[in-house]
Length: 320
Image (tube, rainbow, N blue to C red; front, side, top):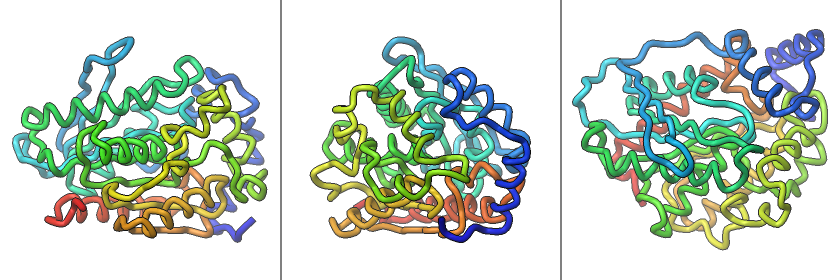
C-alpha cells in the first residue's frame, strides 16, 4: 500500500480502535444507518450558502427530489452556471443529507448553482435505475434553466465514487445526443469499470474503509447480473470512444481499489482529445472529501475542485 498522510494514518487508527464493521458485513439498511451516523463526526462543518431548497420533479416510479444550492453572495435572480451533482455511496448508501456539506462548499468555491440528485438506490432499485434518475434530473435542470436562473450552456455534471460513475455516463450520453449538452464533467475517484479487473483490486484489500471486498459488495447490489457490468452505461471505461465528451476534472487517490481505473479513464480522455485536468494524491484514501474534520487535505481539495469547476464553467472555452 502506498505511504499514507499521517492524518490519514491517525484516522484509520481511530477506526480500528472503534472496531467498526465494514460495509460488506452489514445489510444495505444497516450500512445506510452507519454511514449517516458518521456524518457529524467525519465531515467538515456546514457552511452557509445564499439559499437551499428542495424540489420534487416527475420521474419514473415516484417523484425525484433535487436540492438546489445557490452560492453565498449571489442574488436569487443572477444567471449562474450549474453543477448537477450525483452523490457517492456505491449506489447503495448516501443521499442528499450525506453530501449536503460538500455541495455547499462546492457551490461557494465554484460560485455556481449546485443541484444535488436523490437518485434511487440498490438493491431495491438496480441498474440502470440510478442512471435513469440522474438523466431525468439533468433534463429537468436543462429544461427549467430560465426558472432556475441558470445559464443553459454552462451546465456540468459531477460526483464522487458511484456519483462519478453516473456523471461520466451522463457525459457520454450528452455527447451522443441522449442527454442535454454538457460543459464539464468533474469525476472524483470515480468507479468506471464494474468488472473490477484492475490491479488496484488486487492490492487494496485491507486497512482502509473502501477495499476491494467493499466495492464488490456495492457492485453486486447495483449490478447483480454480471453481464451488465460490461455495459458502458455501468462501466464507462468500456465505452468504444470517449472522444467528444466535455472537458474533465479527474481526481484519484492511490489507496483506493478504484485508483487504476480512474487513472486509465483520465488517460483515455486525454488520448482521445478531451481536455483533462488530473489530480492524483498518492497519500490519500477513497472518501477523503467526506473526512474534513480529520484531514487538512480534504478541505484543500474540495476548494481546489470548486475553483477548477468554477473557472471552467465561467470560461468562454468551457465547451469543446
